[in-house]
Image 1 (cartoon, rainbow, N blue to C red):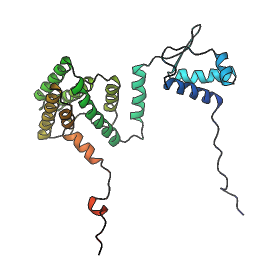
Image 2: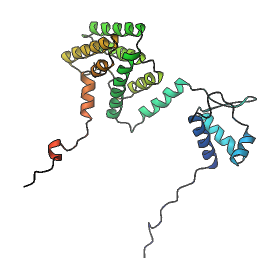
Image 3: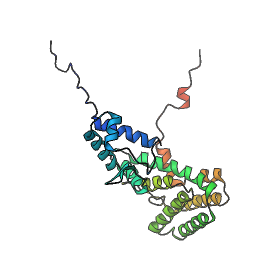
Image 4: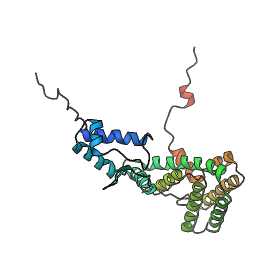
Length: 249
């Protein structure tokens, strides 16, 4: 009997230091340890986990490299403060990953912009409304200049995101707009009539935001090109007719 290929490779068990690091990381992410909290010493951690100080040092080094811990000689180990730039960089790395399709990035961006419009309608300040109005006016003056129109379009959408006063949402949208290989302006590949349609869509969003109408803002936020992007990504599925059972004879 040929025994070739009978056995499967045995998965390697995680190292002790990886297990320790994962436990500390999960404790931080659960909120039981917060930014600035002091961790026990290496010796105390070793006793609690039942491992050597060498294992603890390896785990701490990994957590420090990932930005979860700060280690200062003479001050001990503390949970690191959340750094917005580090958050943005992590998101950017995910978005830029080669396996992320352009379609999936465009789809997530469009969905988040719908959410942003609703939140902005509920939270926009007078200063936010002024910034949005200026962006719409700039777009109206730039329809004959594709580059300027694209910049005005992006400024309007950034202003909508900013009006949510949700920093994480702003960071997410900024990172999605930086994804390579995508045209991140509504103005990139539309003709004159569609460009004017984008302007009218932004005007409808602005009017809804100015009066605090979340439903109208959400309905108006998908202009011409973004609507095409979402429509193009509908999965192929059997139609209602083909799903309907055949009539009995």
